[in-house]
Length: 393
Image 1 (cartoon, helix red, strand yellow):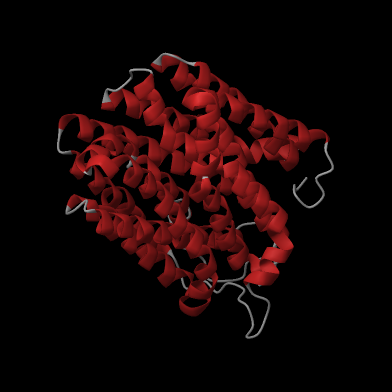
Image 2: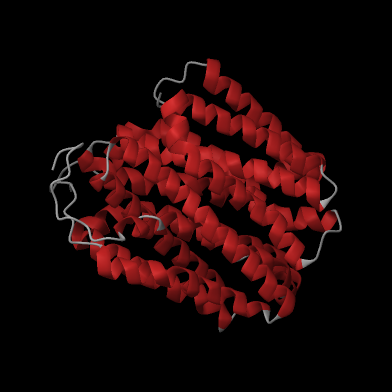
């Protein structure tokens, strides 16, 4: 198998649907949790808000750790068994809070859920970049983002409705219910595809990081923004006296609508203006979205800001996966994609540091305005600066 030519077993009908599960899992990881954060924090007592924030952080940590294990697991067990096992683990660990929200099992389940999500996402994208090339590859990467957003949007609204009208613990059942179709399709359609693997004693994570670190660095910095928005928005809405769980869910869901729109358009946009300009456009749009969120005082304005921010997320998320697939040679691609998940969610794990510092300095609404200024500066730098290995043209 050479890059650009796939000669393995022909996947069965429905195989492309399985490739969407990774981004769907990443969206579900956080979207199902958002409406439940306020009642979760209340049930856990005085330390509730801190523990609730750490449910985000530990899920991101699980994703980070998966990046160092995914390549080894895929090489050892093959992509078919790996993706089926990861999907099953996701369903089980996601539903655990239905039984208990005691801090230790709650946080442990979020860590394992993040780990399963990272393995699932890496394997799905590896299968995609092994079987598909050229325009089909960029389109399907964009569709991954779009599908993930659609699944996250549906789950977010459903979780909000459950929290508003039923026992909020039941919202965690959305994890297995949402992922079960992907699991069944994977069992039926994914063949025993052989991917390029590392020879014994060959280059490992260190060599992959040495090749791709500029992309990883930018990805970690940029991905602090969507994770931070998702974690902090319920508290911002509370400041604005927007507290109805269903309204909160709809406002947060606008990010998924925006990401769904831009993800579907990524392939065509990248072909028209190039990957670098597409990335710069994503940063500029993100600046506009954060500005609207920061200055908005109604659910309508903040929701509009969330939509615009979601457009940004769809563009730069697809860009990072596309860039690693283009730069990494086939024998390093599994580890390259896995470590991209680690880099992306390293930003998610560290987001309390910049958001906390900016909130302390400017207040929570002002922190969104400050983030907007930083994204605008990044967009200008991406267009006119000498970015070298950081951006793929």
